[in-house]
Length: 138
Ligand SMILES: Nc1ncnc2c1ncn2[C@@H]1O[C@H](COP(=O)(O)OP(=O)(O)O)[C@@H](O)[C@H]1O
Ligand SMILES: [Mg+2]
Image (cartoon, rainbow, N blue to C red):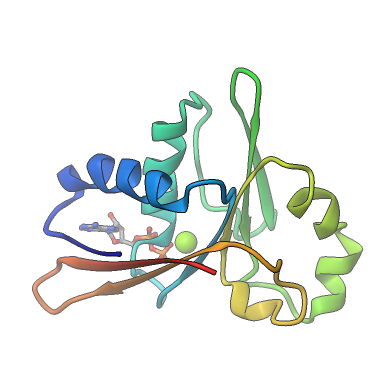
């Protein structure tokens, strides 16, 4: 599924469409350059899922946890990971396979630790500032 977004105002509708497209998948991997809009889209997805927690970039913490009424969201940013052992050491499996929602920025840093099934979201910023979002269930 390909979505083009002209402005931030179109993000809530895109978030709803992405969640619907993912069907039963709860693990989402986000690809795209720095500044493409990964964290911004994740904020919108978290709002769509109904958390009232503040969504921030987990660049330094590696993982943020947001509460929902009967559920949880784990938001990862692996940008600062030096190697995959660091992901093992932080107990990434406990998060990935807890049945919670997982939104993962910079999955390129953990190529050998990716789950079998996930929704791949690729974001590209175009020259006019719009965003192209490609969503694919793997
Ligand atoms: N769909 C969008 N339309 C317009 N601007 C956006 C969009 N998504 C993100 N931005 C802007 O781009 C900048 C970087 O976004 P961010 O989500 O932090 O990127 P990333 O997490 O991919 O590094 C922010 O200033 C944000 O407001
Ligand atoms: Mg980010």
